[in-house]
Image (cartoon, rainbow, N blue to C red; front, side):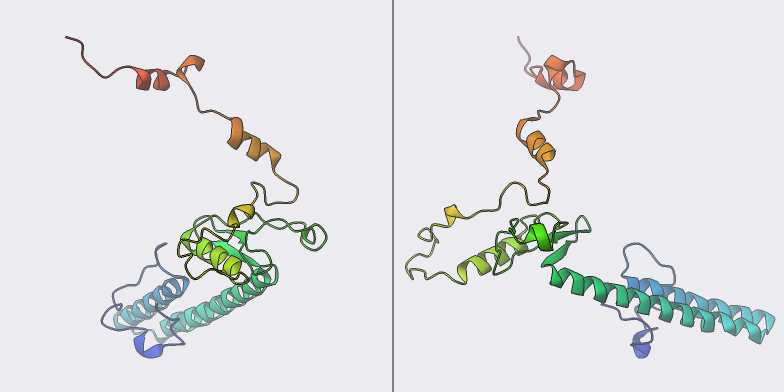
Length: 206
């Protein structure tokens, strides 16, 4: 990953990035700041060659100060958030950009604990079961179990007795859970034309 310009000056402008001068949403934060810095240098250089005005060189200086300040603020905020997430056993879901409770040795299935009602009443919900989260759940759950070496498929641990409950927030979100259980999608009977069309036979009778 590309580093911020003042942490890696030799690679700030090289053969692979010298032409990248405009930030895009697909770039990392460091790459975006580097683009702004490169643009200011190129712009100041071109204007200086044309107008011979040395004052234009203040633009990259100001841009350097600006990017340095913005980067340090962002780094501080990320470090503070990381400490907060670690303190309350949370992680960030990259898909939704929201916080969620991660598996731990004390709570591998990310359920609401009795202590949460007093110490962490605003806890977010459990993390979605991605491959990474699933691996962490298994790791923490298996860490204190004595397993049979012949149990290669993990069928003897009685782990069916342990699971993540449907609701993992305080207070419990009964409305969303009820909708997940009982709500039905639109049907033809309700007058949904699209559903009626989809229910029509595609066959041709001869």
